[in-house]
Length: 349
Image 1 (cartoon, one colour):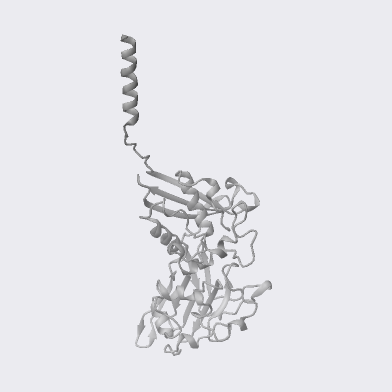
Image 2 (cartoon, rainbow, N blue to C red):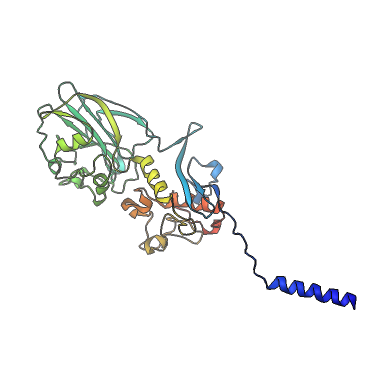
């Protein structure tokens, strides 16, 4: 009997405990997590063997809110890694040189430039100089063709000229496309006559990125050449530009560094349970570009695109093509345990 009573008491205790609800602490998400995307993954290249990679570093609090973020675009050169967003530059100019238009298209060949540029980051670059005699040299990398356009102005130039009246088709006294800074431009002219009747701010609709932010904010075809030069840092005494040695910077969001800073600013404060990609893959024309192995832009359905091109209008706050950046972000979430590798859409690098 004594044993039976003991057993009954034990069973009563078990049932009582099992009927109670105990509060279970949720696992903290706090920590720093790293993810990568890399060039050549779609053809079987391993991360350790890649020559280009994007690294996303996220710091989360215990609830999964992003408190810090950085995105780095790494490139390998002569056995050493450097970041593509390194904005330092060595630029010189010879104002005695007359710029000559490059040969566009499949037989591309650069031509004569006033400027000698050495930098890792040509994206959104501009440079300007004014000689002792008042000659002006201006360089602007146009973001859609990715050509380096140069304008040389004589000392007696009329600076009240509207930008809309300054040609970009390689003719004398206009902006001369001298060097192609990247072969991945959205517009790839086969002849400069294709840009007839355009100005530097109207080559493409997407040139609004130059007017929307940065040093050229508010500048467009209705602005004067003087407005443009002053925005670039030139000062005037009456209507004559003051002598300056070469000055340079980045327009729009500020080159690669500016774009990646914009992505980080977008992410900070977001909860990773709600933001699990930098690209909305439910959009049909992008979703149609994702194959059965979750690679984007490799096997394309009709109407699909190779890149999340609306990024020019500000996906995640930036103006870069976003699919590869999204991959490295998603892999940081894999490291944090939010996603699995099977969830990752591998963007076009």
